[in-house]
Amino acid sequence: MAKKAVATFKAGVQKKMVKCIRMDKSPKTGAYVFTEELVEEDKTKEFFAKK
Image 1 (cartoon, rainbow, N blue to C red):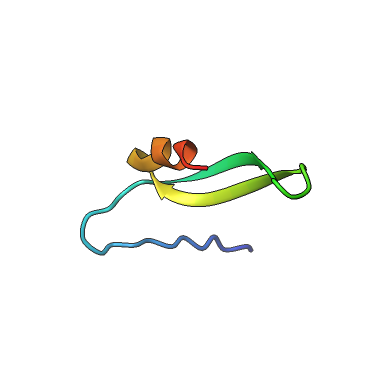
Image 2: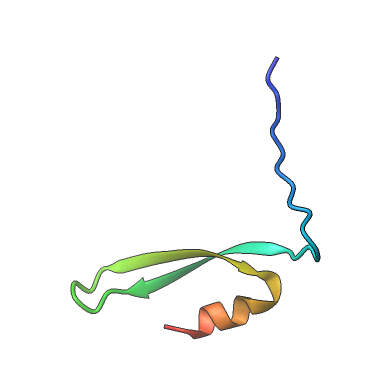
């Protein structure tokens, strides 16, 4: 039988993290580049605002 591994982090205040993916255009080649980052849920607007 397969087992499911679950990782929990219980250090102080628990914050919800989300994975944000932004599509940027490369200045060198003009091709699109995908930028992925794990950020806190309340800082998603800041992630999408920066270039």
